[in-house]
Length: 300
Image (cartoon, rainbow, N blue to C red):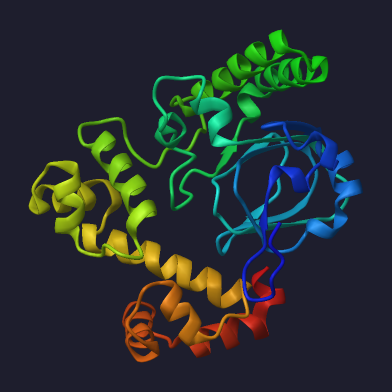
C-alpha cells in the first residue's frame, strides 16, 4: 500500500488480510467484520483490484469519483481498479465484500479483457451502482454460494468459486429489471467499450480522436458519430472527460502541486494544464482544489 503524502493511497489485496495470506487473488469477507478490523480505511483511496460490495442493510454514503451515492438496502457497488472512493456508514452494515484481481478471472478465460466488457467495470464508472431489490433472494443465494466455496479453501473450491463469480457478473450484466447499463446493446457498443479501454491505457499520451480511431480500425468521423449517439457528446469530449476526472482526483485526494499534476498528466507546463482545466470546467485548478477543500463536508 502506498501512503506517500503526495499520492492517493493505492491498496493491494494484501492490505486487506493478514500478510500470511497474500498469495490469495480473491477475498470474500463479511462487510461488518471487515470494517471492524479496518476502520482506518474510510479515507479516499484506490484499489489495484476489482471490488463488489453487496449491501443487504445499512445507511450512509459511498463516494465514487466525486459522485455521492446514498447507501441503500439490496444494492451492489462495483469498483474498477484505479477508481477513487470512500464510504461513510451511519452504523455497522450487513453485507458481503468481494475483492479479486484481474488475473484471477482472466487467466481462467481465453479473453484477457473479459472483465472490461461488463457495463459496471468501465473506466468512467457508469453503472457502478445496481439495485437488486427485485431479485435480492437470488442474489443472496449466489453470494452465499461464493462465501461457502471460499471458506472451503481447497483447489476444487477455486474452480467453483470462479464459476459462481462469473455467473454473478454475467447475470448482473443482463438487462434485468433495475440494472443500470451505460450502453444500449446495439451496433457500435462493442467498439465504444474498446474505445473506453484504450482511453484508460493512453489518456495521458493520446488525446486526439484520430489516434483512437486508428487503433479501432475505423474513421474518426464514425467514432465521433458513435460517441455522440451513445454518450451524447463527441469522441474528443469523451477523451477530455477522462483527463479532467484524473485531474480532479489528484487535486482533491493528493498533495501534489499543480505543476506536479501537470507533469503527471503529461502537460507541457503548469500554464498549459491550468488553461486546459479552466476551459473545460470554467474554474482554475487552484480554485477547484480550494473550493472542494472548503466544502468537503457538504460534498461528502
